[in-house]
Length: 64
Image (tube, rainbow, N blue to C red):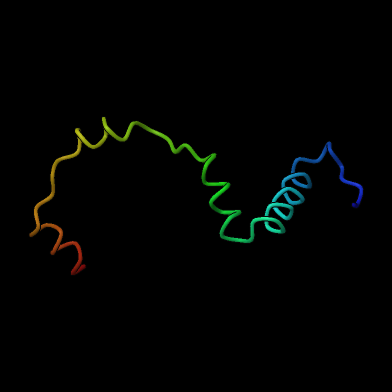
């Protein structure tokens, strides 16, 4: 094991991600990290405030 500067957050993050990749592989690493991303905002509130979009509007948007 190499010397890790525990006062350097970037170095700790890089070494930690490499350790995860070594054990879990790339896909497992991403899935592990995704567990700690809780997102932001209030989906339920935002969904209720947003007007429903019609199929015609979706079709128009897709043609742009």
